[in-house]
Length: 116
Image (cartoon, rainbow, N blue to C red; front, side, top):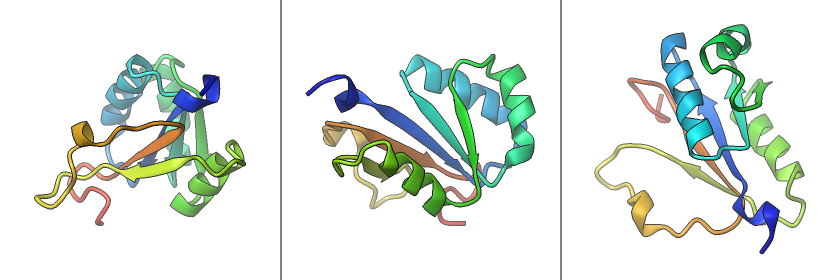
């Protein structure tokens, strides 16, 4: 255990509305997210700086695979977990999972979530 054991990241995939991004970034800052990976939305970066007030560093990547690769490179010991957050009847509760070690949470589109 150490400083790297509690790293929390956020991967945002297929987000449609820029206004939602500001709220997500402010929430990410409140939860101690170290870095946000914004997949496929390079045009949102200037907006992010204004609405998120620069609270969390943001990196743009072309794909989910690129985001996963970049985050795994930060944790060469292989301890990084990537968790898709989705509201589905069969989904496991976040409360039942002890997230120990570096974890990246991935959220998707406002309507389709990660499935679209």
